[in-house]
Image (cartoon, rainbow, N blue to C red; front, side, top):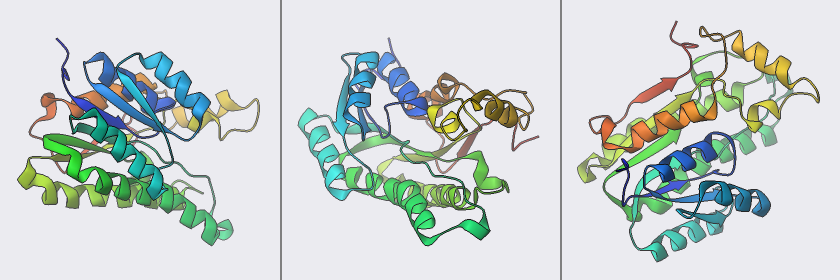
Length: 248
């Protein structure tokens, strides 16, 4: 018997990397999983890899109309939501001297605005005892060069997690922030110059006490923990899965 039998989950940005790994893990544990993605082909490929317990919704979390489509699809399913993982986000590199208003706004709109308004839109659908999992980052507690806007956006997400945990506690809804360290995903390797992907991974691995980057399945295991009753007395917390990067 799966840990999430008869549960319904939403994973934004569920077409690759951590989001896809999390969607697969939640589905394997019995949940029906809704995933969102901006690219139809990648969305279809992700759905095929997850199996029949998944529904795809093409959309961008920064677009209010697309978020309305997510709400409509979940409503049509008729079971509300027991798990929400706001995985969608991202951002490029820009040191202070090169940061532009557009870079700042794009980063915060994706990571902070996308998170805020995803959770806001689905609030009426959250069942009693639901688990909301926000996507943080180990960069939020460090000073990595050129990652100022991205790190600040993830620190903002962490702050909202504390506030929402207090606001939603009367409904027995838990809100926690998952904080992955460097993880081998298309988002990480895609930022590397062509042919230098392994060098980039090795550089990140050198910052981790365990001497390697994480695999998406390892982060997905933590998503399952926060989604399930195994974490039933956790809310407002920050769970670091970073190989000791920010702990040691």
